[in-house]
Length: 611
Image (cartoon, rainbow, N blue to C red; front, side):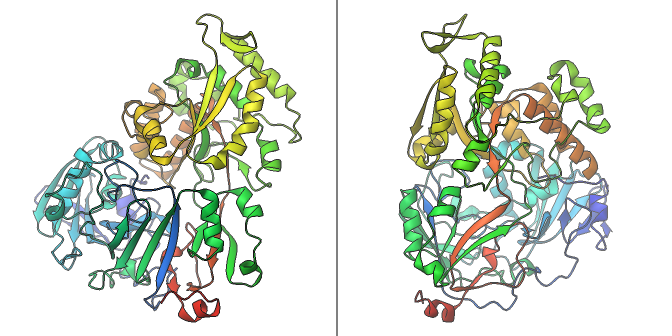
């Protein structure tokens, strides 16, 4: 995420009030932060527009997940962590509105003060905030949480918090974050996301290790029962302190939320159809098109909905491991791109549901389109001798086919590129003319569902001499090989994006993260221009500047052919048993599930009462 406008803090509107601190620097006291022009909700708002403030409490929401888990600490980057532990169990200082993704509003904090020179931010905590064991939540816990994440947490946090250099407990309910580097308007929001842990609880435990020991929670739910890789039950804390906070009104409506785990994707579908759990977001076009013709749909007991959203879809792609010599030549990577026939796959495998992805910032205004603008060229020109000429002269486009299996021209182009890169057919195998290495590619998967997509791709690869195969492994092995060992040739991965990209780009594409265990730089991108553009994005001072910089970065990433772009859909495919009430307004960026409530009369009508 990323903030904007030199006037960001000044434009936060109406609520301005410059106050002195112990420093010479003045601060602006805010009721919210924003990455846009102004927050949607002004001072004194009572609740978000997309909730029912009178929603009843009660009932159980039953959800499901595939795979297993051996860890209920999702912040240390170890093992397979359980679902549902984010905002339900660990709350943040601030929260993002589901209809205003560029703004944050106070939760544990009741307000904040941001230095006019952006050298620090002070969060004023709500005195009534409590952990689930009844102990006060104070600035000591906030400092402990930050320090622990940066020193012992998932490697992501070391990059994300890179420019947060100190946390000071000003008083029990006031905490100060100090920043370094160029002024960065994103940093108040970055620290506002901080999840707060109980220092007293975690001091007696090893944060770095996997655990199934239920923690003291700072959120509205606590873990009531658990069995590794089988189920997790969250129980609403009847003594939760924060029900009255405006960002919580109309939410956290279920007495319990249960997550059941299934090893097999097919069993997961059948379990939903049998009513074993209540809500499913379908990720497979095949299953969406073919698996839900069953009586409960016809009877109106189950809703099947395609819900349009306006959130960035990011980049889903076949990701090459650039740490391996065979993938280091961009001509090789482009040649392999010519071997993937999206149009045929969309017609034959995806039931026409997808659009080809052609940007790392897809479905957002950050996506580069057409030829570079004058503003983009001004940014890119100093790096001309380090970039492909196409960055400056061509609109990025992917190879296409007629969708009928006629891909001869594309495969011929692939052969030409491979020959230029020094690869030739020897004894029916693509072999490097100097090193003698045979081009072998193993696609590492954690879900067998992708095998039907990759198998036709492999057939195309074999036609140009590539020896290709699929290896599908269980979840924990997949994560270890992808995140830590980097033991793969190619994987399928989604790099999510926000409406305001920022620090997280270091973790995706920054050279420092390429060799860091657990980072999301799975491709191993190391490029000095990419590094410099990321830092410019982080330091952007206006939204217009941010958009231009992101488009410039997009072009550099695309024309280096680091991965084969996949496909996207800008709608949620949602199925639910009709036993819930919903507000009249659905937030534009989410399904709105967080605002639903259990409706006993509906549940009785369909014979699915859980009370």
